[in-house]
Image 1 (spheres, one colour):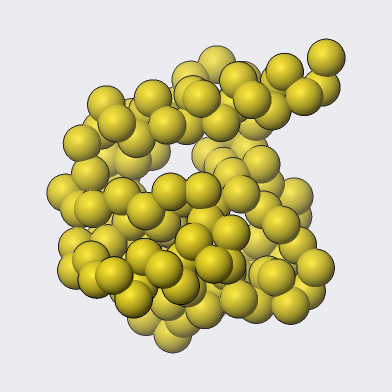
Image 2: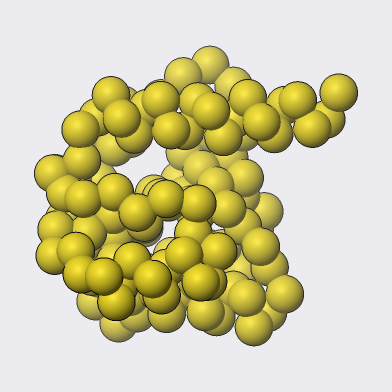
Length: 125
């Protein structure tokens, strides 16, 4: 089972991401704020997080920072509707696998996640 946490404060975006990533062998949990996402990521093992950068209470960047400080290296894809070079650099420095710009083309997100799943599966064999 490949476990994904999707965190976005916009319900329509969160549900669109959930719908695009639902597949056999994939378990999806959701969070509607940065603090909820951090709580879930610290409490359970996830194979991937897909997070908005701008959320209430904690940003996606701050969540990545907290996870690194806790010694967790959950792979992450960040999404933002307001991309800047500084945000993208911070995300990549903290280990984000990718920074996608909203509105995220669902096919690009799906392919990106499929490649991450394939790499993880190849590493297990």
